[in-house]
Length: 452
Image (cartoon, rainbow, N blue to C red):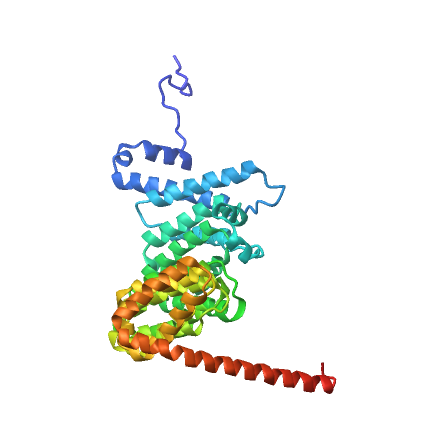
């Protein structure tokens, strides 16, 4: 009987495939692979990086919120993916690899560094109520920018500065600084947090960052007087000044003299005075000798017609007096008392009342008491002028209270100063008459020669 040797046995195994897919599946199912923690962690890390790269690619597309082609659903999808990316960045236990970090920083730059819209009328916006001013300056792009700023802040906070040094360079910092021109206060607040965190962690950039901020402030003072982010920049500087060591470096003193003191000059000072006052007071607290320089600088830039600025500056001077070196009291008593007296004679009742309240400050009274002979003639004349002719009854009442205090300090000198007021007023009236006659003669001569 012949056996057919080509008949296939029933139980013979089927030939298995040796493709890459088979080997990959076999490797995953093998006990040695499933029981290896390191390989499992590496696989999860690889999977997360792939997902992050996919999200980064999607989030690199820019929405202007003004193009009708861009649908709201696409905008919502991008925001959802940005939040996913933020979650992955926050939950990542290992530092991000360069394969992820490079496209991630590129995506952040593409979203943040954009042309800002033309600035609107800032003086108009500053006069609006808070809600109306916010609605006038709110940016529709913020729903995306908010998450991008959160991602950047997380990176700067948790990543080793040496790994980010190639990305957070001088051009990157200049582009960040330019964004402080944004009119959206939410963006400026996020920028402030990011910029300050970079200054804290990237010590190699500190000198460049201070110089760049100085350039922005100087350009605002002497060129444009238009900038939305001055308050935020000064708030950053307030924290920086707080960390200066004593004795102060010459560079920092020059910043006080050349930048901070002239910042009292612009009309927009009302928008950032709180931060500016804090910066100046920090300098005086660290070195009280600088108090005289700051006080004289403020008096130099004293406003003529802006009563709101006057009220703020009177309050700032009162705070500075608390920290000034007592050795400078006698030198500053006369110029300071002269300006305060001029303010209490102001026809604006708010300015006059604020100037009169300064006399409740013990340090100010102590300063004046060191130079009574010089100060009293000026102050007493101002008090008597208020009592005679000021239109506000509350100002006259406050003046009466201050007058009683001054009389108690030195009754004889006060009475002597009152006696000297009449001769000075008589001399002033005579000078006024002579001046008027002189101008009348000039006008008559000009009329005869047909100049008028």
